[in-house]
Length: 194
Image 1 (cartoon, one colour):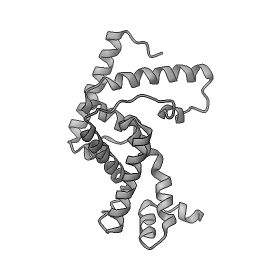
Image 2: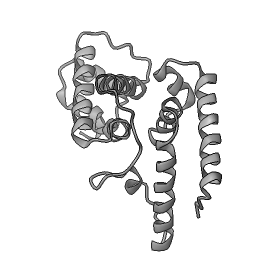
Image 3: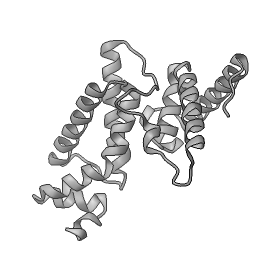
Image 4: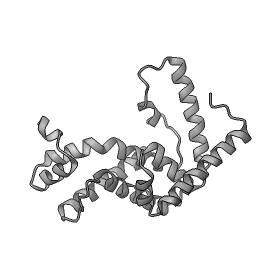
């Protein structure tokens, strides 16, 4: 079992195609946190995020079983693209924009703890993150999307460009304008981030 967990994504997919259901379970467990978090940050609804997460992996399974998965060693990026497209479909259907705000059930920053932080530091960090999330919510949709994918889903700008089907320069430009807009809002509202 330990050897199976050490297999690459490519090897796990190959094992799954040869009938090893456990291989896909390991693949799912390995990447579910990142994929679910990025879905949740877009839809801001736990039930909808769970539905889209499930739909994402159903689509992944069907694509792999049909032999249409093009393995370039980028399983996570491919899975995130599927999740992203399903989120976009959700918003097109509902004509809503995503927001980045915590709920009682889930807060991405709650899993990002520093082992050496004291209570005061954690409180300040939590307040700062809440202020930043509120400012991110106020950004235009394209800028908000890049911020979410870069800082919350931890994607590179190349991955963001591929996922959103824009050039790298466009993705970088959107991030630049997002940062400019956030700084402007901080100054206008006289927000202290310390």
